[in-house]
Image 1: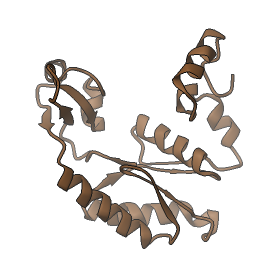
Image 2: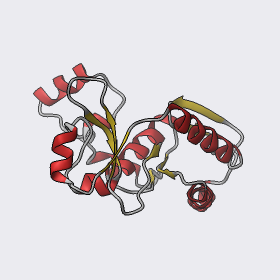
Image 3: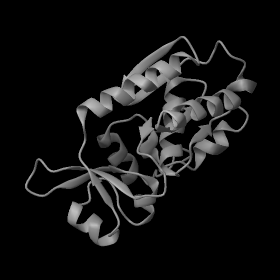
Image 4: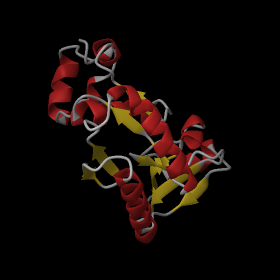
Length: 182
């Protein structure tokens, strides 16, 4: 998952195609100041006066995605573009004990290219995606759902990180199920 750079400056991407512009995404510095996805831009600026407002650039996004793909292909040969800005890498060709070191090496290369990424690792693509979502929400760069403590880590996570429909999430909330452990 590619996210905005976390270089100490609060940054937000906005959508100004509607009557009232809203924040599409922000970096952790802006989030710490109270900015979040969907907040009106005016409110975001009130919460964070130093906020740097950016509009998405298709050319820049394509260049960033190309760089991410090229550098990731240097890490492992089997890659799937899961969605825009998200890659799923098959690490089965590497011993699991080397995954964290490999991820740190990838971070170094991507940092040099000006990209700030989040990496989630797990036994399956779904677990890796959940790990990446949790890492991004917690402002971390790497989260590994290792088999040894996977159930303990997953137990406390909200059901919203699972790949289930919003209707099912609503029903689970009605039944009092708020976490994956529940």
